[in-house]
Amino acid sequence: MTITSPTTTQHTILRAEGFSCPSCVGKIEKQVGRLDGVSSVKVRFASSRVVVDHDPARVSVADLIAAVSKAGYAASKVAF
Image (cartoon, rainbow, N blue to C red; front, top):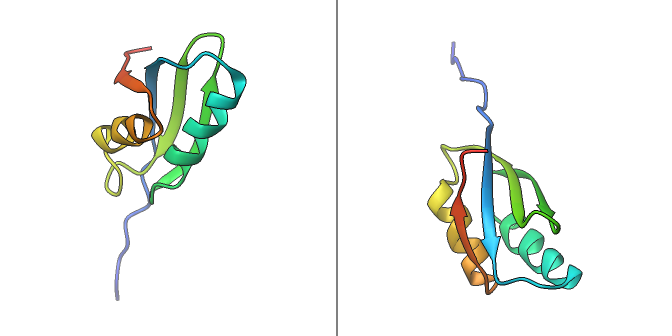
């Protein structure tokens, strides 16, 4: 009998810098959303927040930040 552990979802909030238009939102969401283990990504344009639900065993916060960087923007993790 094989026992599998349930998938753990982590809720991470990043603060993004350098985007100034609504089309930038799509670029970030697309790049982060491509990562294996990301179940949800939503960019809040007005507050410069990137809200991500992900499996921390498959994708780390550093991976999320790197994906935002690949989209052309700087990001860092925030506590709230």
